[in-house]
Length: 280
Image (cartoon, rainbow, N blue to C red; front, side):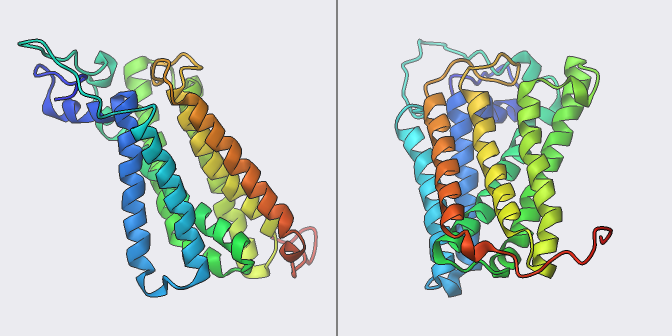
């Protein structure tokens, strides 16, 4: 049993203590990302020599290495402790164990958050290889829709829980952490819609790359807000040591992505054009 578990807590909520504690939430992030990595490797196992797939995997492995480094270093979820005889943990926060949705809301959010790593990795691969046509969009369409769907469900479940348990009066009463999960959903939704223009007309290439970078970057920023202790929220963890590392990762992702877009600027010019101002 973890230090957050308790024999007095129902088994379902004892499992949920994995993501109700700062260190365990990093384990869940790394676990979900590892699952996506395995799925991508299986999907593209016959194209591992393709530079586009290779760069995408490198990007995903670097992201995974960052979160594993957090576990080895500042997060240290496997730190041992010597409990006294008869020790029984405090269990999760009472607010987190009086509604069944809290056992499902966070994993759904993680499947959405982490899932955007896949289209982001292929976007970086397209920039690195110069294959900036619409091929990589086709490769990642289902991955993007999969991540977006889970993020949508996670946000809906979170809103339902907050409405029933905290009495915040609905969506617009969310606290900053809830709104932080909404931001990547907004940019991801915009990307899903605008990417259809690029697939059909070859337009909005820079815009779509920027939206995808923004979506992935905002998932890291949302993780920082939740786990750094910079805001007060029932969702946020207490002051932790991993905040500066997450903020640094956010800065590196934005800087590298913008540098690659600027580098490929000439190749990103759209071959298509809008026919009329009142076209769809």
